[in-house]
Image (tube, rainbow, N blue to C red; front, top):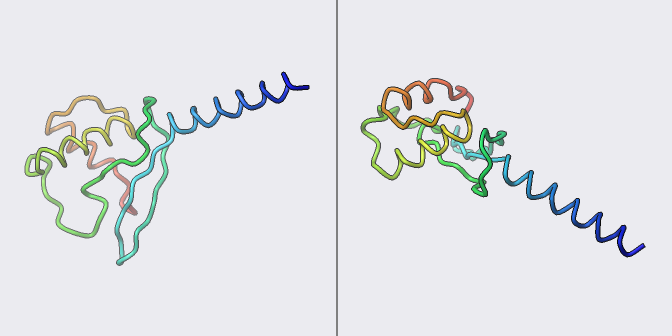
Length: 103
């Protein structure tokens, strides 16, 4: 009986780790409300929260004008949400176009 409980605990822990590895979320700010959008990641990572500088009603700055930290975080978001691994400006602009308008 003890082995069955141990096996169930290991299976449960494995399911939790898989959920963490393949699920992410991003916050968007619309109408003075914070919305959380979950997505399935294309690659496994322990990072859960991602950053999208375009998930708000503010200015829509071109990718090449983003500060280096924001650009890097946006490239990570594009990689894990859309599978885009090329951090070039043109490719990140294409990623920006893929973001749903409701975010």
